View 1 (tube, rainbow, N blue to C red):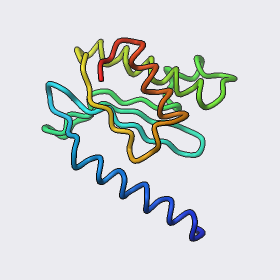
View 2: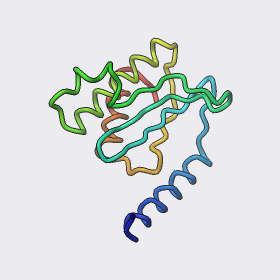
View 3: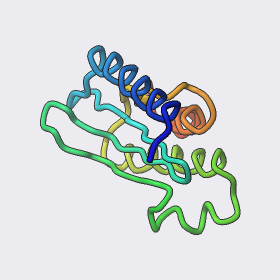
View 4: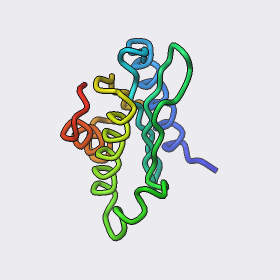
Length: 124
């Protein structure tokens, strides 16, 4: 099913993610904004690790984003997702988060989410 190259990439990403998660932790005062990316979609959620609850959860499949991302490419979709995540977080009373890139390189779609969330008012 997977080629050796694909398995190696996945294993390396999981190792990077494990190293990152050893160092960062979402608390109620500063929850974790984690990003997950697939081939066609991107997902973002804000998690309080002390209680194990997801406070804000959005993806490029969310109904709120359907009209905003129509006809846009993946990076532009990621920017819209970052803006909406920041707006929902501020509505929930969250101003400061810690960013979890999930083992992905801070480049492209992951960077677009982070930059748009910062521009919309989240601090990290």
